[in-house]
Image (cartoon, rainbow, N blue to C red):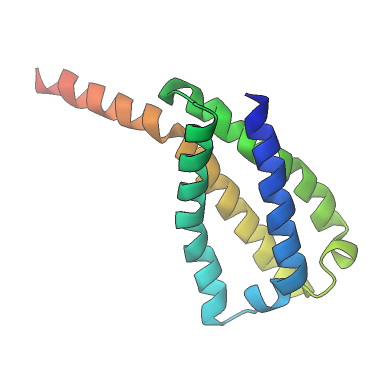
Length: 133
């Protein structure tokens, strides 16, 4: 399971580098690129989860914990990076920082939800079977 925390750290590092270099452009308010970053992270997270779960051989029952371990390093490190945003993300304006914070919540929510989907689906199927009787 520690592999998932390492993957999470590497993904956080890569995403931090992207937002440090191109954050001002990616988070410019009222632009199509802003919406593209919010929409585009959905398939990226889905692919990340699929590859991570396969690489780490996470059984469906282990995926909620694996997703938590994927998200946790970035969530903790983003407390620091956003607190010192003028050093870490110098090109992102204050209004961009609000959008960046929203984007972070969105991305981490997708990771956590993606890890819980097998359990949610299983409960839903079980509920449907039980109600069909």
